[in-house]
Image (cartoon, rainbow, N blue to C red):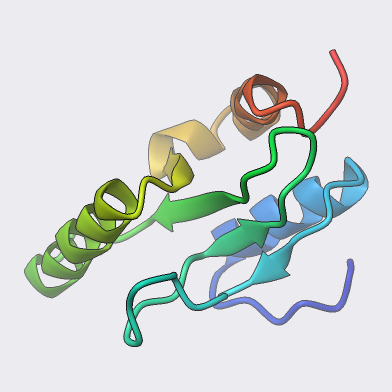
Length: 109
């Protein structure tokens, strides 16, 4: 809807949700403190003065899980605000993501 080219139907659903709810975001921005890893979605600092990152964990293969572990370590080390989305969350994405975005004051109550 907003012109972002994403890698999966699930990411398209997330991207469209953010767009429809007026959440300014970027797709696949490099994570701070690392040259090899990119986030799924990046939401620039707002009222909470820190960016929020969104990761969709869609695969469960060994190679992917190792990459997930490395990325989670970066999020912890850099103390980044993260919203994690799994396949199960997609079933009720509207409620799940609305709750998470409200927690970070990114959409109104």
